[in-house]
Image (cartoon, rainbow, N blue to C red; front, side, top):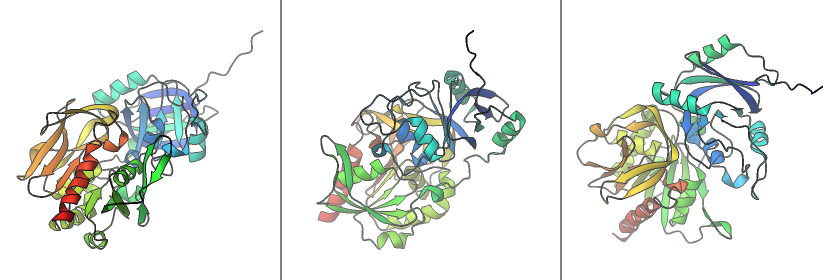
Length: 386
């Protein structure tokens, strides 16, 4: 007689509207509350899970092959996963990649992150697109014991990202120096030994590869916490200031960050912002930000550069956007999304200041957007020569 296998679900995803998705749990056990988003990238699940911009979110991966290359220390964007959990179509297989140091399941278990496999991610993605990013509760219980009413209540109790300052939770506790450059064959990561420009990077949730790109563009990088003041930034006598990506509502983080940014703008320093840094720069200039229905999350987003006519394939991860209709005089919209026309870049007409909504450090295209780091370097070079 054939042996029967236990097919009971060991994980459950509950949406605030009462919809329930069952599946097979892997990684850590327990329960997580968060906003649910979907990411369309075909690679980079480890980078996505360790991107601080995903704080307060659970990620649905639309690409089914998640876990197939394992994980390794070099691909972490920060020390530990920041996303609250993951949702996938197929259970992770054994990794098939020479760089793999661990399986995805082992890594998630050791890092305390919950995941669910076997979910109809197409159905789930359609629900997110139609209804907006829902609040959810994800539970992994190896015994398959779920209190569905309690899970739905947890989903409904999640406060949401609007009005939430998460940068303070993911920023560095104290300042530090960074000199590691981008990975290159065959030496891997090398060190910047002859920097040309002093840059202060304000860490609202900075990814390591952004700092590597700054170093590769010739920068001596000093990273300061999100709460740094104008005086603390200027005390380093920088040639330029970088405003990093990060999670949460830009208006909430802007309570303390916008006064600092206004002070930097008054000092006439070159400024470059990415993602949350872009949004808070816009706030400092007098514009507004808005919460998007389901945001932009993926490595295949087409963006048009108004000033050159060039179309770039970009990597994106944001649930808020700058309201282009609120941009004041003297601020030019430089980039727009070709998916929905939302704002993806600005620059000032009278200062060496610019920012973009997308992530040029993520190698989309794969090199469509690295010129932005070179542009920042050119602005600093012009200032140094002046």
